[in-house]
Image 1: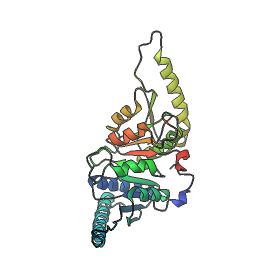
Image 2: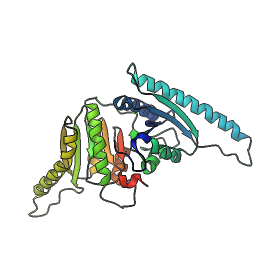
Image 3: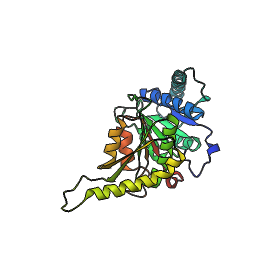
Image 4: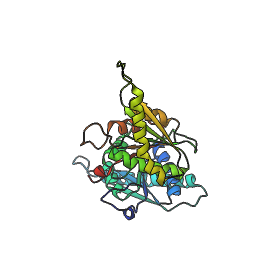
Length: 303
């Protein structure tokens, strides 16, 4: 599991952290995290975070009442999450699970918590007023600010346990970290890894005398060499290389329809160096039908 440079493996004492809010996406996130915890033999922390109530001069007495309502709501949310977790693991011996409630800013709190997490799991959208958007504000915020890999889970996804893990690879730092995690996930599940690489992000151009096959062959050779070390580390993982000449986000989204998991780096080779989240990762996180893990490279994990 790729780890940030400001924390060591033993610092991941919260294990897999799941942000819960009682929404269908939250339930799906808990279910996914339960299975992942069993595979990795690590604990799970179910966390309910809600913005604190601030009293106003016009209604100072309402703050304590609202705070009590929030506290009761958080308790109910965590109770529901615990039941969902128990149902997901069934009779399988599962690692420990703990619950925690924090009345504090949601994204900032979870981003700070991520420093002590192995994975941070969240539903693609919650119960907020923009719940119809492909990606909720909390999920979107965590993709920018979390210090560990972020898992976005969609409530309507169901995939065969034999479905492959799909990896988006482009040779960037975050792509290298994503490659390591994707091989781990494929090995844990005992399934094939499909490595998708867009050797050009534009369609075939009708240029006279251009042999596109040469470029594709060169890209395939470079990608095969890049994956060779990982295949030696994970000899039981069968790898299928898929080269495309088109927008990578489009192809990764299409591949997600028949995958059980998609893994991408947070930022690729293109775009602006100062950005934490690239357009490919952002698009895939929004449109993928399968759970998506977005992995930051070491250069951004320090920030």
